[in-house]
Image (cartoon, rainbow, N blue to C red; front, top):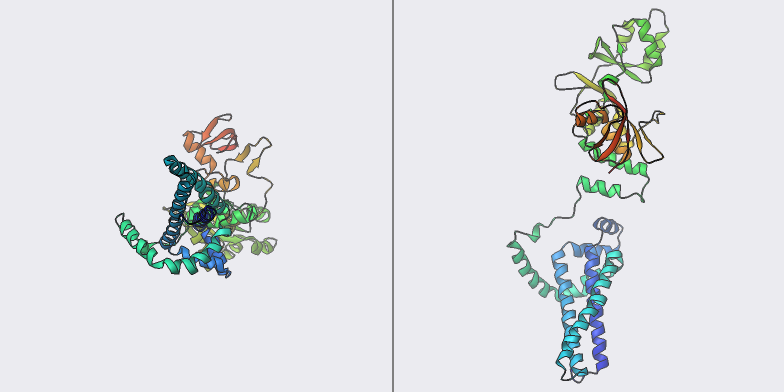
Length: 418
């Protein structure tokens, strides 16, 4: 190389540093591409995306190709730097060491950190053009060398029980998909975001989690006089009511309010008229998954059922509206809102609210495996019914008891949240 001018040597060195920067940056860009956006672009016939997707099907081959080229460029740059140092400072042994330090710093700044940072921020800008270069000339030209290198790599990885042939495509589990949807605040309205999360949560919810509890069921007791039953029919806020005798455990059917209203004013209206209008009662095991019950409601064309435990005792009532609310939230806005955010950032919460609904509204993570309501969770935690003014830290959430009665907590204030 003594015949090569120094200017040309510096030019070759600059080219080697540029090639090293290209290989380093393209490696980071290709490996940090969003795989799901990449698949979307492939469906749109984006040619660069198709090339990149093809390369990423064999990451071992791609990495082998990039590192082979990068090491060649770096090694050649080191050799050129040594020649330049000897030519510039003949007889100075320290010149080679100094040149090595200067080259290392130059490569870190120019060929490593800068291109990799840019590639990490804007991977598509470098990944798609580089995919063309790797697929067409380089891979075809260097394939025998890459194949030979990967042969030894695969043998080495087998010692660690890693089989490259069983490489699986990137997949998402439910929790990861929830995290992606939760992070997509700027891409969709919050109501759609909550609907998607509600659909994903159907898998883990049972009818017990969303049912109207037994003590809140509004129904008609046929053992009552007709004169007491008729006002209940007229004033009912519900479309359908369970009809029973003496106890809610003895449900004999469901009454459609619209069907019975036209008969209530007729002379001689009695309990037999009510019985004649009843539909067959439906009983649902409390452990039935929400998505399973939704399919049953659809297939059997029903929209209400009684939830029973393993002994057949009624534990609550569930409707099609309850199931739909798991996806779309409350269908009707009620003036008596169960969760009210205060100006100081605290929350006033009706303790009868279900934990699933509270978590949905506030994006908290209170446990739902045990008690189904906030009142139940507080009582389980305290092992008693706390007095008003009591402050506790409930699974990381500070709250104060505001109201209670003999049997339950009624109103609480959440002071802070996780």
